[in-house]
Structures are given as C-alpha cells and as structure tokens.
Length: 148
Image 1 (cartoon, rainbow, N blue to C red):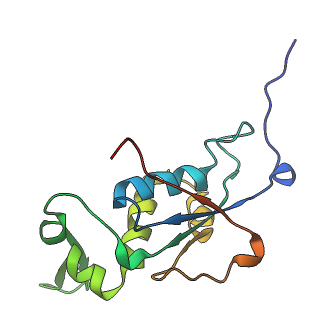
Image 2 (cartoon, helix red, strand yellow; image 1 turned 180 degrees about the vertical axis):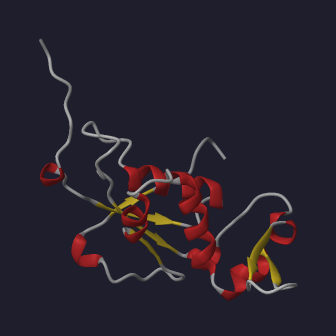
C-alpha cells in the first residue's frame, strides 16, 4: 500500500527567481510570483507546509497595465477619523511608490492563512534593474505568453 507524501520543513529547498516587471502586465507578473511563493509547481507541494521559493521582481517603475486602469483603478486608505478616506489612482501610486502596487496585488493572490506573511517576506521588489541578491544566483523567469 502506497502512502501519501507530506513534505517536512527540513526537506524544503528554496530557490531564487527573478521576474522583470517591464515584460508583462501587473496581473501576469503577480500570478507568476504568487505561484512561485506558494510552491504550487513543485512535486513536493504540501498545502499546510510553506514550500515556496524566493521571488525578486525588478523594474517595478516600468510596470504595465491594460485598458484605462492607470486612471480608473483606485487605491483607498482610511485614517480612522470621520471623512478620512483618501483615494489615489494607479498612476499616482505608480509615480509615488511602484513596489506597493505589486505587493498588494501578490498579497491578494495568496491564500489567507498563517503562511501568507512568511511568503510575502520572501517577495523582494525593486524599482530599478539592480538588486542585491546576486550571491543567491537567481534564475530569470520570463512571463511572456503567446505569440505577441
């Protein structure tokens, strides 16, 4: 009789991956990053153990979106006081801090459980093309799909 394999925390080997944000749209980059952070593509994937890898996203300032999202999509925050609702368009947020956009997008794609914070800590986002993780020898992943 075969037994079901369940990964142990000591068996996990984490790899490093680089994704270039200027290659594709926000949604494609976020789904690929969340898939790598969760570890869904690994044969040893176990849902209650964090099997994911490290993800480095570069060129966040060159992020692309489709349609009219630059002007239409809004980000909200509230001070906690009456009338304290602040809105910012995607374009304004991209000019202020583009790393927040990717972080929020990836966070929304991760399962809501005790493993989410640890997975987000393995997400490294940089506005430019330089990153301080060369020693980890990250593998570059392309997110381009189709014949476009």
